[in-house]
Length: 353
Ligand SMILES: Nc1ncnc2c1ncn2[C@@H]1O[C@H](COP(=O)(O)OP(=O)(O)O)[C@@H](O)[C@H]1O
Ligand SMILES: [Mg+2]
Image 1 (cartoon, rainbow, N blue to C red):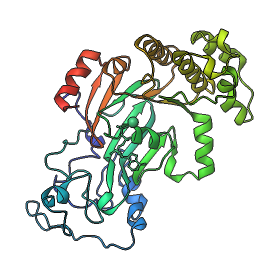
Image 2: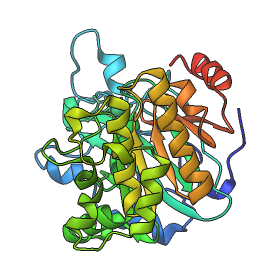
Image 3: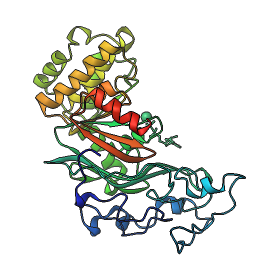
Image 4: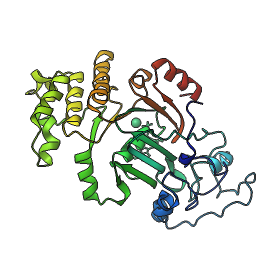
């Protein structure tokens, strides 16, 4: 296992026994102490309220004798009772004890230095009852300021969910998201919108440029929407670094994929956000254009002190980052510092990803 976890970050896995049926309020330990524990403060689980018709299952007496859930589909009884993905009743099995054959939770190391963003005991459940999906199965991880972190894992492992919750595009079911000094769960929708606009930059696989606007209009759109004045000097340096000056008056459909993504990177950098989230930013690019975008993001971290969190399933892309964390089934299962494509590939093989 790479770099060991720090004791104060033990929010996942231990000290809870593996076969627990429910998340207990106040039992999670976080770096912020019990008073700040996401579950303790969160009150009843949100999903519990969303499913008022069913009552909680009793806690089983014994770890080895799981109480049977309500009748499961034929032949699926074992799997259904313990799978973290499918539950036949509310509450679904907890993140740490759902599937005995599932991934063992890993506690990432605490960040040295300033933290740009973090999740604490993050649970995200889509749906409820039989269709409940633990997209995030109770994870705690922090992202260092001025660092470039890759979030890796197979398809469906929760990478996008983690990033969307970190970026305030979606809300957790349980747990906390903190960006800078803001606890996102305590923000109103209006405050969240402001934080997304002023403090967060996004880069998506599909570029997400406005087709009717020119490149420069796309780049300055977040600034215009905020009613702010662009910092001309900064914009000039971004545009030159990204080598898009001669494309600025063109609309997206007149640009190559790589150029469109560089415009999207410029748009993300334009507001000098506290943190940039990139979801598979090179997924649509050829190798050369992808490498360029990855280099640019790396430079923005090294030269401009930008913080970047990038979701990718590409070991080569992860090799540009300072650190990679690996997700499987909504859990962090490993992390790696100064990753190289080769080491990331090896790690993915051991994870079966
Ligand atoms: N809006 C949604 N509704 C229901 N299930 C979802 C939704 N979004 C994601 N999921 C499920 O959550 C899990 C994690 O998805 P996602 O975060 O998109 O994974 P990744 O980005 O690693 O491919 C998957 O099982 C996915 O099907
Ligand atoms: Mg995804």
